[in-house]
View 1 (tube, rainbow, N blue to C red):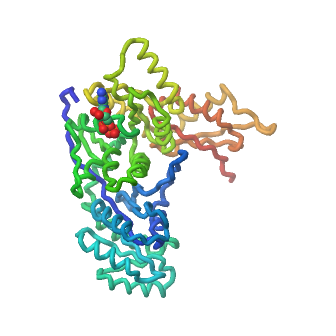
View 2 (cartoon, rainbow, N blue to C red):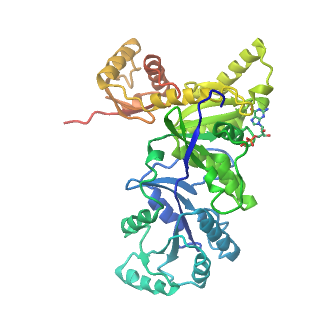
View 3 (cartoon, protein in one colour):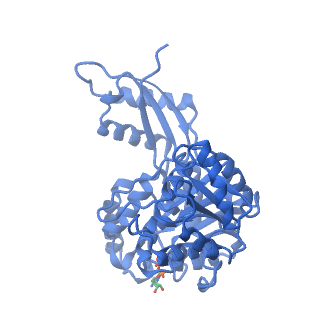
Length: 450
Ligand code: GDP
C-alpha cells in the first residue's frame, strides 16, 4: 500500500469450539444440532465430498467457529486409536473450548479414558458431554462419567434437543473474552479466496505491509493467520484468509479437504468475497466454481485478477482480457473486476474502494414505495407470461432483508414465474438501483388470504 495511509492491524481471530470423541457417540448429530439454525451451504462440485466440518455459529449473541474433527473419520465403526489421538491433538492445539462427547447408552468406554488422559495436558476448558441421554434413567447414569475426573458432566440428547441450551450457555461463557469481538462484529468481513498459488497470501501480506505471514508450527500462532482485523481510513475490516487455514492441516491427506471447507467456511463468515485469479493462467473452471460458491452463499463478490504485472498490457490484449473475464464470469456479471499485482502492490488500495461500494450495496435497503413504483413500471413494460390460460399478476413487493438484498414479490401464481422472467426483473432492478457486486434474491409468494 503506497498511498501513505497506514493499515493498522488491530486484532485477530474468532474463538474456536471443537467437538471430539470416539466414533458413533453422536458428534455429527451434535454438530448438526448446533448449526441447524443456519441454512447449510450445499456444494455441487463433482468429485468433492460435501464437507461441513467448520461452521460459523452465532449463539445468543456470541460468535465462534465450531469444528467437528469427527468429520475426518474414514469409517465410523473404526476405533482407530491413532486417529482419535490426532483429532484430540488438533483440538488441543487449535480450539479455545473443547466439547468431549461420550455415549450415555454405552457408558464409559476404555478409549474415553485415553482421550481424557490426553486432554489433561491442556488447560483449555473441556466440557464432558454425555450424549444420547434421552430418558431420565440415562441422564441419571450419566454421572458415572464423573469417574473420568471431571467436575461436571453434561447429559444431553443431540438428537432430541435435550439440555443443549443449558450446555451451550456454559460453553459461550467459557469462550475467551466475551464482548471483545464487538469490533469484529461491526467490521466489514472480507474473505480472500481462490485456488492455490493465485497469490492470496501475497495479497494479504501486501495489505498488511508484511513481507511474509509468519508461519509457525507452534500451537496458537498458525491460527493467527486466519482472521485479521485491520483499520484503514478509519474503517474496520476483518480479513479472512483461507491460505492460513490451509496451513492448519498438520496431516497431509487432510489438506485438500481442509482447503475446500476453508473456502466454504470463509464464505459462511464473510460479507464480501475477493475471488482471486491468476492472470498468467487465464480464467479456469476452478475459478468459476469458486465464484459459484460465493454466489450461492449470497455474498458480495469482487473479481480480482492478480499477477497483472506479468501481462502484456497492449490495448488489444487488455481488451481481450476484459472480454474473456466478462464471458467467464457472466453468471456473476454484477461483480466488479479489478486487475492488480499483489506483488508490486499496484491497485491493491483500490480494492478497498470497491469493498466499500459493494458493501453499501450489499446492505442497501430500498424503501417499499420506491420498490413498488419500480416493479409497477417493470411489469407494465413486460408482463409476466400468462399461465395455463390465466393472467399472472405481480401485486406487491417488499425488501425483507439485506446482506444480500432479498425481495419478496407477491403474485397470484408463484409457480408460474419462469427463470427467464425472474432474470428480467433482476436486470431491471439492477438497472434502476445498481446493486453493484451483490447478489439479489427474489422470492415469489402468494399473498395470504384473509
Ligand atoms: P496463494 O496460494 O494463493 O496464497 O499464493 P501465494 O501468495 O503463495 O503466491 C503464489 C506465487 O505467486 C508466489 O510465488 C508469489 O510470489 C507469486 N505471486 C503472487 N502474486 C503475484 C503478483 O501479483 N505478481 C507476480 N509476478 N507474482 C505473484
